[in-house]
Amino acid sequence: MPPAPSPGPTFTPTPTPPPWEPLAPGISQRYVPVERPGAPGPSYLYALRIEPQYVTFRVHYDPQQPRSIEEWQAVTGASVVVNGGFFSGANRPVGRIIVDGELFGAPLYPYRYGDDSVSIPGLFAVVDETVALYALGRSTYNPRGLRFDQAVESYPVLLLPGRQPSYPTETGREARRTVIAMDEGGNVIILVSDLPLFSLYELARWLAASDLGLDIALNLDGGRSSGLAVAVPGRSDLIPAYVPLPIVIAVYSRGG
Image 1: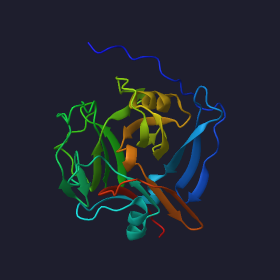
Image 2: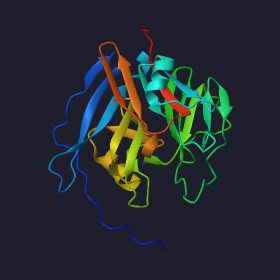
Image 3: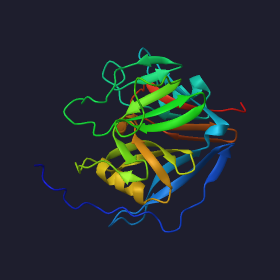
Image 4: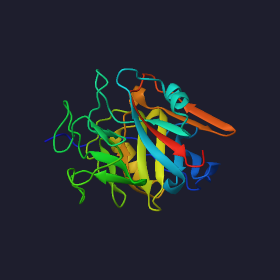
């Protein structure tokens, strides 16, 4: 049996949540404080709340010409661009992606990838402008039963539906992180940590205890791949990725 997780730092959300700042119709931002024991002050996660009825989500994939996150934003003209799921050294997706109905990659579920179990993989998907997050093997979703317009498969699911932390093992490996989630109101929440604040075990439990009202959350690629660009009228923000990215998720305002 694996050894029991050693006690790690306790992350507690701030008792008074800051307000969401509107950036564009259906897109708001927050800097979410993370209190770390012994630190002189909080660290912050960058959060976006996206109301699906105001935007269009698309997945972009270019294995021949991976780009920086700011290059992807310039090429696509999207309001928001965030890194997607994992990819191999040949820029092939680890797990499935669907780009405008075209499938690339192979399913993670019910397989394992590499030396570590993927735990519970998940799927961020769009069909007919409707957005959903699935925990594969833990829902009524049938991988062969639906056809999606856009999708990114990644791992692990950090919160099962109902805000249940689902990553069981404390590895102690802290890294930069990117998370895509849905809250109890049906909004898409994107979170990026530009600092190595969390192991996956810690992150799952912090998300469950946070004031974000999350229902389900999926880990995307992290570490050097974590990155996000926002470009809306009068405002731009950038958390750079440190490697070129072949896969991104883009958010387009429907008004332009």
